[in-house]
Image 1 (cartoon, rainbow, N blue to C red):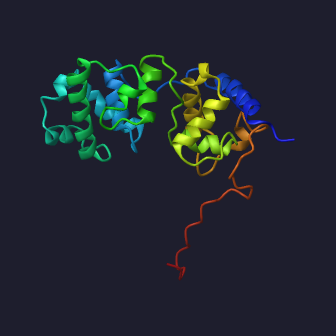
Image 2 (cartoon, rainbow, N blue to C red):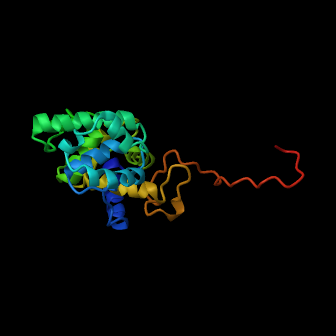
Image 3 (cartoon, rainbow, N blue to C red):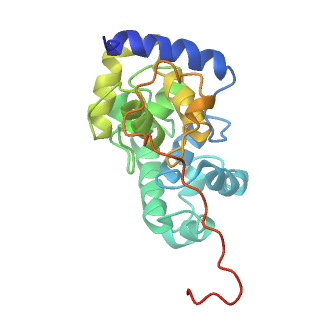
Length: 231
């Protein structure tokens, strides 16, 4: 008999919590404002690249008023190794303007207020609320969480919003902040997208492996020998 999602989620949490006791937010930040900016920059970009850029960015510019001293072109130049840097520069300046004009330069602590900021959707708001303020407002659903939740049989939904709604039903609220970190760490490790190492996985015995090929692993083709007619 298939394991119910609620029971499966409980066992997954138990095993991943033990396997990754040091899991944490991978975006380097010293305060909630830095985390907000780093999370905006991280959309469709690796955390490693964001951390490289923000190391210098946050050294130069400490708060929203500092960023507002820049033009969009100047900020875009500061972050030009980030994907969609022009759009993100516009979003960051818009966010900084709203922070200064409406929130006294402080990052707000509610979902509704955060969603009024440029470039901020539920994922970014959840990251900031959970990791900067310890507020469990929802479950962060990034590409790893989306993929693993489907693979582990925790949801059949395809969109982040619907996946989050399913996870909120089966993941205890006390784990909403950490659950994505455990999944992200696992997804960057043995449960990678293209070739998961199921035989080495702490969840191997309980994971339904939805969508995982049961065929032989793909091997690299041998290079053509000298004199071969193949091109």
